[in-house]
Amino acid sequence: MANAINWFEIPVADLDRASKFYGTVLGAELAEQDIMGTKMAFLPSSQTEVGGALCQGEGYEPASNGTMVYLNGGEDLGTPLSRVEAAGGKVVLPKTKISDENGYFAIFMDTEGNKVAFHSMG
Image (cartoon, rainbow, N blue to C red; front, side, top):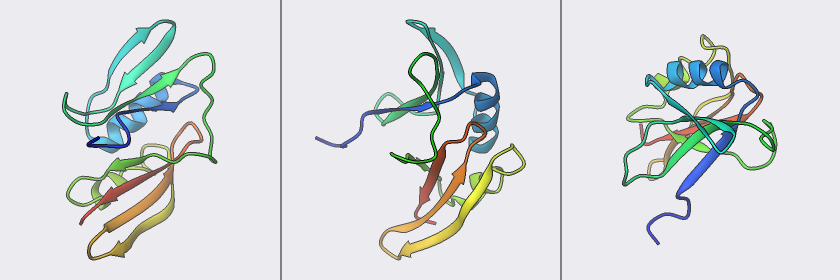
């Protein structure tokens, strides 16, 4: 098993608002699709990487507690983190060093009320 995770879903109350937020923060356009009654917006990934989506529909409720997803912060998570508040989110924990071997992390609240994190080596 290469990765413990192969797919994740972030629940949202308003897919348009959430897509705009994550698109701005990640500097990417999110493709949207309706799959079996669930509105989804796909976060950037390739066929060989772990992927995920924003999901709006029955049974999807944003939460600030429980499982937390760590998004790839790229070369320096300071870049996407710097876009969080301007896009309508809130930085909860600024860029924080874990160790030389494990890099950095930061935690933010998205526009939907989810607590999400970034990780990067720089």
